[in-house]
Length: 137
Image (cartoon, rainbow, N blue to C red; front, side, top):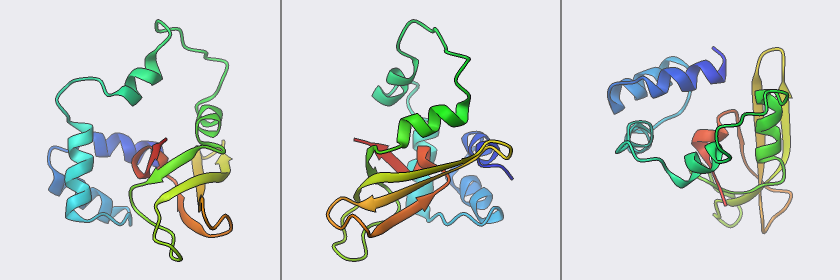
């Protein structure tokens, strides 16, 4: 299943338990606490978060000339991030920098490689779901 499709299905889950089942079916590690947090994020109060507001700012004008995979690359490449799911095995920090991104346009697969800010060569996480695993700083 493509990551974008999985994210769309996750957003349609009607409970944290359903979200955990979906994650398990797709071999995505997800504990109960994270499932509750993601479910709340997907089905929050109806208010727009600062991140969502940033994504739609500009009066609704969408640059359709930039494909979604390139937008992801531009968003995350060299970005400072907080990782919600992993930490540096050396110092324990979950503050990192995305030093490498990779996009498979044909399959619409996307990877972010996050490295510890302190230990630049220490990989914290390789994620295909940066929207869920990372917080832009």
